[in-house]
Image 1 (cartoon, rainbow over the protein chains, first blue to last red):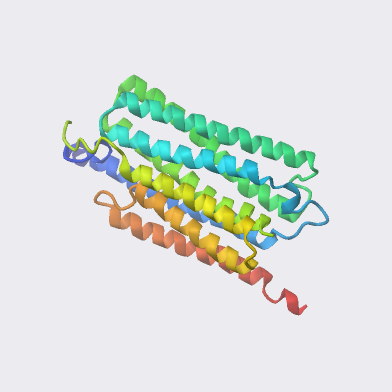
Image 2: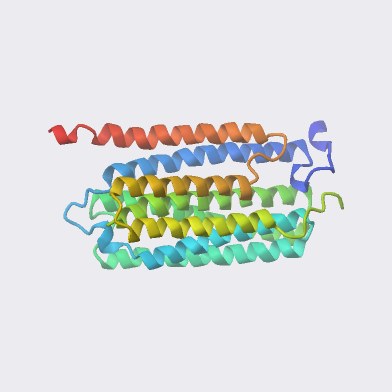
Length: 203
Length: 101
């Protein structure tokens, strides 16, 4: 407690107490574990991606235009999250919340596209049970989509705290951490975009 | 609370965003519009993905910032090592040798 009471006001809000610095460090360690989780799913997909079992192939179901829209939505939301943290460091609470809301709107747009994509796949006869390719595809995409869904709920609760309590070292640290999480989701998507969609569509 | 009133324009974020978009569309163009071999295309777009992920880590996530910056860097390097072991290792073990059967 004595350690966490020491406040270094020369640092950005989220780094001012020992406790908050350790929370941020701990979250980076968690992201390391998340990277390994997604690595296992990419590994499974990499092994099974051509096991079609007579069902639809990549080229039968992937729609490049929709994939590009999803990619741009998520990439832009990662950028707006960066701007939100930038505004937080300028102690601009209104700017922070505005950019957070824009970020979540883009994230919701991404989720809407992904759900439509899954419905489209199901209509084409491409479900989790169809083939090993589709099982591993849905597990990989679904785990990422579940993370985005969780992130939207989490960030919404952080926004409520910001509205109620304003910018404090604690709310700043919580905002910074959801920011890290959101950027991480875009990092995972870069690899899904490259090693699932583009790889599947190479002529 | 008024110190470290940083720049009023987030220049590194804007650069990171524009470059990320360029890398995304470059990868799509190379994968879908060229006649290079599958292997060459995968090496190029895989490299572009790694560059873009690095940009997110350094320009958006402030990976090396603060007193734990070095720890974060080592943590991420170790995570990348684990990814290579798990992904490349799994694919190698489970697909090599099949042609011989």
